[in-house]
Length: 160
Ligand SMILES: [Zn+2]
Image 1 (cartoon, rainbow, N blue to C red):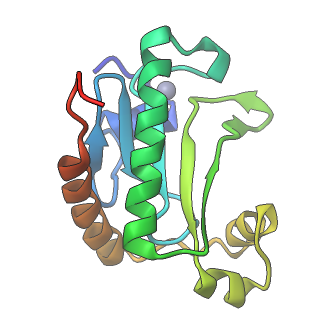
Image 2 (cartoon, rainbow, N blue to C red; image 1 turned 135 degrees about the horizontal axis):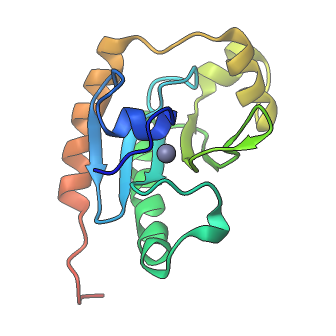
C-alpha cells in the first residue's frame, strides 16, 4: 500500500502504528477499522485507501463504493450495539488543516448519552473531552464480530 508517512490514517492502514482490533473490512478502494479515538466501543472508521483530503477529490470509483459501504457499516454498528441512532460524520480537519478523510460511524448508545447527559454533536464533543479510550479487549471482540458480519453481508456484483 502506498501510504503517506506521517498521516495518521495512512500510518494505521500500513501497520506503522498499532491498531486495536486490526483491519475489519476492505473493498477495492476503502478500508474499515475501529476508531482509535474516544468515541466508544463500536465506533467504526471508513476511509479511502488512497490519501485523499477532501470528499470532492474522490474518484468516481471511490464514490461508487462509498454508499454501499457506509450502509453496510451502519448496519453492523446497529446490529452489534443496538444504539438509539448510528451517527455518520466526517470532519477530517486537524489543526485547521485538511487531513485524510475518514467517516466515523458511531453508535449513539443510551449508556453513553445518559452518562454524558447529551446527544447529537454534543455527545461527540463530550466524549472527546472525556478522552476515555475504549478497552482494547472490547474493541477486539467487537472487531472480530464486525469482520464476520461484513464478510457475510458482502453484496454480490450484478444482482439487485
Ligand atoms: Zn493519508
